[in-house]
Length: 239
Image 1: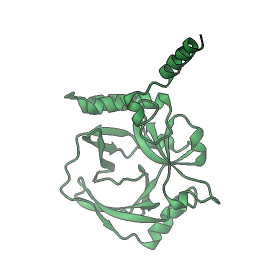
Image 2 (image 1 turned 90 degrees about the vertical axis):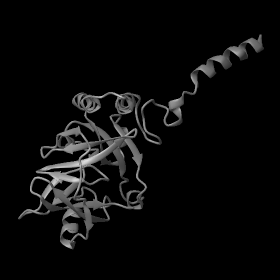
Image 3 (image 1 turned 180 degrees about the vertical axis):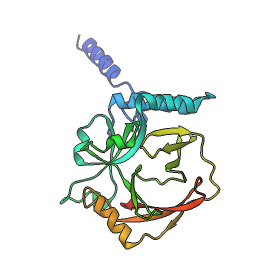
Image 4 (image 1 turned 30 degrees about the vertical axis):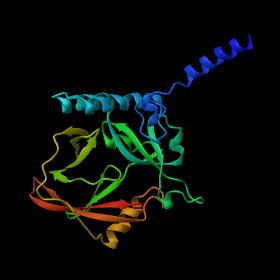
């Protein structure tokens, strides 16, 4: 009798902990490795992965349709309190300045959004700012974390992104709207230059918490409409 009971319990337990291939990455399908990520967000991300992996001739159209429904997955910063938000994908930051016991810890966040400017009122997250320095008075733009445009098109910023081996262009419009397109062709490549102390101070002063950035970096980026280079300044956290 005990043997029969053991076999029954073992079979039930085995069914509950059945290991599926995707679990090598995360317990929730579609979630990235080592992240805090809900089942709901994982399933949404899994749809994007399937589009990127597909052989569909209208892949970019399908990606933009996805963005119309859910938004694009945008890297930003997060407060410690962001861990309670199930709409976010979250990792611990490896930066020492983000893990100071005396200060609030910072998180790496990815969040779905159709317009980056729509995120500015969310208290759990910080959207990085960049300074655009080629005008009489520097202007501020919301940008994505950990990346810089490869090209400027008028007032739009163009990035090169990759998903499941598929490369595409991500356009961050001047109004904050996000779209994908063919990978931009770049002939005049960006170069990194030294930021002035004034611009570094201005960037640090915009940070909502004092331990978010340790400094700044600047890049000259080609504007294909004005046919000239522009300088952008970004916050720097750690290597």
